Amino acid sequence: MTETIGKYQIIRTLGKGATATVYLADDPDMRRQVAIKLILFGENSAMSRRLRKIFQTEDAIGRRLDHPNIVKVYDAVVEKDRAYLVMEFVDGGALDQFCAINRLLPMHRVIGIIFKCCLALDYAFRQGVVHRDIKPANILLGPDDNPRISDFGLGLNLQKDMGKDSTFVMGVGSPAYMSPEQVKNYPLNHKTDLYSLGVLLFQLLTGRLPFRANNPATLVYKIVNMDSPSVCALNPNLPPGLDPIIKKALEKDLYSRYRNGAAFAKDLSTVRYQMLDDDQTQQDLTHFEALRKMEFFVEFEDIELWEVLRISVWRELSEKVTLIREGDKHRKFGVIIDGFVEVSSNGRVICRLGSSEVVGEMAFLHPTDTLRHATVVTLETTKFLEINSAALELSSDEVQERFNKVLLSKILGRLREANKVLAKLGQTAVQGSLSTSSIGLTPPLELL
Image 1 (cartoon, one colour):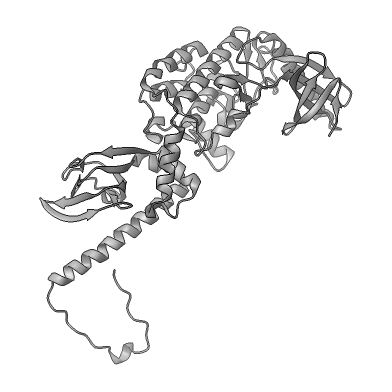
Image 2: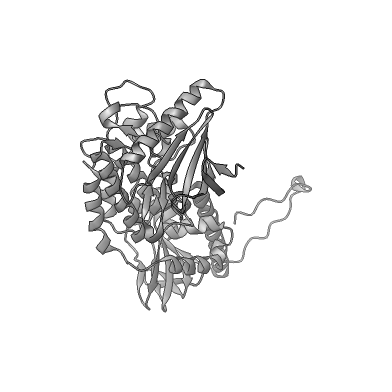
C-alpha cells in the first residue's frame, strides 16, 4: 500500500469499491484525520473519461454543499494516472451494517437518522443538487447518530445538467434503491432521492427491501408496477403511523410523492411520540436468547430467529386470558414461550399445552378456512410469541420453510396422540392374517 498520497500520510484502508479505494490518512497541515478516495484511471480511455467525470462531479458538488449531515470535501487532485479526493472522516461506518435482520437499530434511532437525511437532501436540492445514488453504503454514521451523506459522484447539478441529453446524467444508481422514473431512464428531479430514502427507511426498519427479485428484469417490473408491502405488517412492533409515511415516500406517481425533504421530515416527526425512547437492543437480545433455548426453534438459524422476532409480538399475559375464541375468524397463531394454556371445544377440554407448543396453527395452515374451531385460554401467567401471519407470508423463504416443517411435525404428533385416545374408546379391532400373495412384500405404510 502507498505510504503517502500527496502530502497525506496513509494510516489504513477503510474500504474498496469497483472504481476507488478509500484510505484513512493524516493531514499534516490541519492536524486532523481525513478520508481519501483514490481513483486509478487505467488504460481504458472510455472508463478513464467516465471516472474523471465522476471525480469532477463529486469534487464540484462536495465543495458547494456545506451542511452538518453531508460529508465535507477539503481537497481534490487530478494527476495523469490517478485522482484523489480528500474528505471529512466519519468514524462510525456506513448504514449498510445495520440493514441485516439481526443488526437492526432501535426504531427511534432509525427515525432520527432518516429525519436528518431528509433535511440534508432538502438542503442539497435548494442548492440545485440531486444525489441519485442514495443507499446504505453512501450514508455514514457519526457520533450521536449524526448521519453524513457521502459520494456525490453520480450527483446531478440541476442548474447545469438538466438541459443535456446524456447517458451519464440518466440511468445511474443502485437498482434496488432506484425510483420508478430512474429505472425507466426518465429525467430526474429531487423526488428520486426521497424515494430512495424511503426504500432505505423501509430496509432499516424491517431488515429487507420493499422489492426483491432474483434478476434485474423482475426487480424493475416490481419497482414500476407493484405496491410495496406494509412495513407494519412486516414488523408489527412499529407504530401504525409509519405506514402512510413510507407509502407516500414510495409513491410511483411523482405528484403524490413528498414534494421535498422538509415535508418528509415533518411527517416523520409526528410518529416520534408513538415510540419508546429507551433502547430496545437489550430486550431484543433477551428475547432472542429465550427463543434459542426452545425446542420449537431448535432447527432455526440465528439469522432466522432474528427475523422471527421482527415479524412477531412478544406478549406477557395474566391468568385466564383468551388467546383464541371458538367461532372467530382470523389466522392468528403463536408459540408458548413460558406458562400453560388450555385448549377446549364446545366447553370441553381437548388438551393443555406448555412451553414450545404452538396454538392456532390449523387456521394459519388451512388454505381457505379461517374459522376457529377451538378456544385457547391461559391457565397461569404466560409468555406468548404471537406470529403475524401476513408478515410471515412476506418473510424469507427459509423462515417460511422452517415454520411449515415444524408446524407439520407438531400436527402429525398431535394426530398420533389423538389416535391413541380414540383407540382406547374404540371396539376391539379385527385381527387380519397375512395373505399368501403378500408374503415377502413390503408391509403397508401406516396412515399415521
